Image (tube, rainbow, N blue to C red; front, side, top):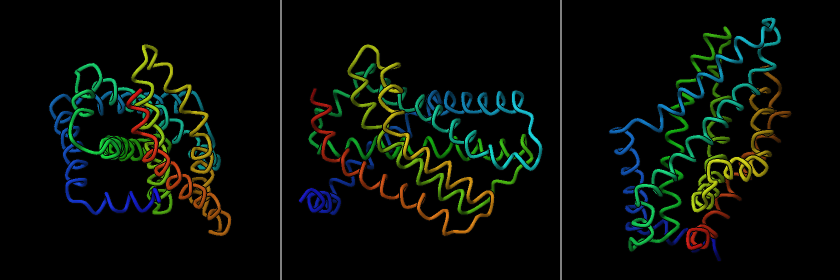
Length: 235
């Protein structure tokens, strides 16, 4: 029933226009200020640099540690971006305006999730070549890029929902990571395992279960967010 409702809404041109308007608003605001992507990017590059100087590895061990370092970097930078994305809306009064707009509340969720995903992918696209140069490791692998996309979708799907909950509290900067990381642990574990499998050129049979976990996680938590976002923002 819920799935059919989602399909009917997705077919509506006004629903898609509402999502597109929210995404365009976030992208236009970021192009003017550049405070969100710059904060995420600086933080991510600092994490990569710290790992580079703190851990000296033999060439044959770099591929083993690379997935963990990458996803630690992505998850920390992503949390910073999620927090800033919703807190900016709250502090400027834009969140109240969005909630008063005559659009379905789930359109607000998908619009914010899409813009957060775009910001996260931009940061990842910059971090990957920098990491490859610092660690002398080639990361140009289509399988790895697929894992990064699936992992980012799952991360943003849950993170956007929980940031909408945390932004209503005074301790939002601390509350979001506390709520997010226990929930996001399965997608991080699956992403690290699948990334390591592609970088080490393991057989697809051993990587496929982790890819399936990522896909199921993305679908399930996107559906959950679609069903409960309306109730969360009303609190």
